[in-house]
Amino acid sequence: MGYRSDGVLAITKDGLAKLLIHDVRMPEILSEMKSSVVGDHHYWTYQGFKMYEQYPDVVELHQWLAFLEETVGAEDFAYIRLGEEDDDILSMGDPCEFGIHIERSISTAAEW
Image 1 (cartoon, rainbow, N blue to C red):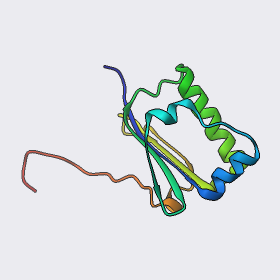
Image 2 (image 1 turned 180 degrees about the vertical axis):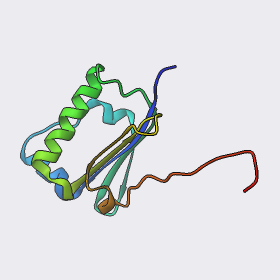
Image 3 (image 1 turned 90 degrees about the vertical axis):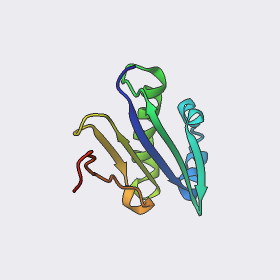
Image 4 (image 1 turned 120 degrees about the horizontal axis):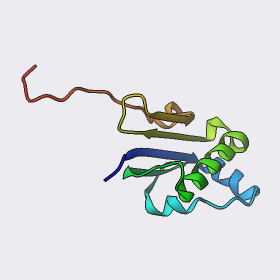
């Protein structure tokens, strides 16, 4: 079974153009994610992925995200990965700019 994560990545049209200028290819793992376009923003989302640091496709994604942060700039991309543990959150870029946020809630069989 293993430890699973959910995540979302968003890039502006300008951010994608910057990637083209630098001739940077998209990570293979993005092809396994659900993608959508909303306005000038492209989104990739995933649920239940095993994002182990030793997996080559995860290494490639993290290297690519570091390149985005350094070259494209925080204003043109956002990434949030939410793991199973309460403190396992990775946030990069500017999630608020894309309307991406984490919601916390409590579920219980008892009535409130």
